[in-house]
Length: 348
View 1 (cartoon, rainbow, N blue to C red):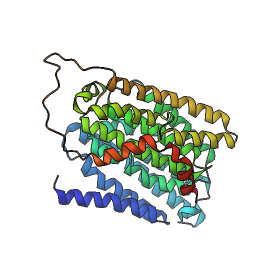
View 2: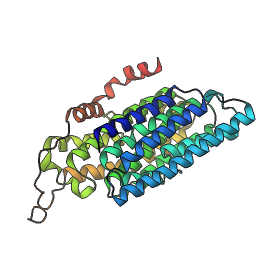
View 3: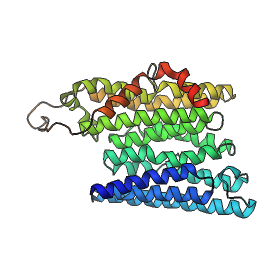
View 4: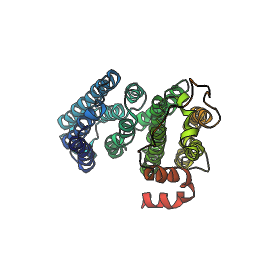
């Protein structure tokens, strides 16, 4: 892609998210979300592969439906209550519609079906943008809406953690596994949203760091399914040794960074008297942990076929920058001891 066009599209992505962050009026927030969607579509379709075009079409249709629902709900709110302010959604009808529209935008279950299909059709770089940056603007709006619809948020959160765990169990494609991982993590964030927005922000931050390093590892190895992970020891032995730690951090095992948000969320849910919800969420984390362990096993404990037909193809050295990967990997593995400091920063 022409670097000038790429720069304009990335600028559009940043501007759309910033407009949504800065807006207090529903029309401005909607405009930011639309700019976001329109800026990523050429990035998704840039390879002119039928699979990429199909994924782009699916993404465009779901995002357009969500944006239309959001606009309709905000107009309904203005008609019923005379208010366009984001903070002033008090009527239950527009409030519920907006929550569901934003859930469709980020891919919360049961409105998640588009996400694995779309992510599977994209290259890893665009997939990384879709899994991280594209979640920020809708999430900022959900955070501002959070006092209403407590039951709806808990239902969305629990169904996302369960479906995100179950859906990834029988997948062999890495991008689909990462899509279900994304659904499960978003479920955890939404569960605790109404009780402690600061813990939700902390979870979002750790999710972004962990997903960033996972995508970069797969990109460095040029891996798109579980079988190609077995050859990674020949390409980057040190990284292959560290990758299980990144994956187990995504699964939420102590003493890795990913344990921090899960621990704080379960503690907060127990404090709020929601022990059954906390138990279900903790059990659903075991489902996700299974497929992370499966990836770790495929990567470090299996050897690719060593006969001539299965030998690793000849490769040039990777042109990918290693500093972002090194930084995000260190953060993915080592941040747990800093939990009190990070919590204090986010709550202050």
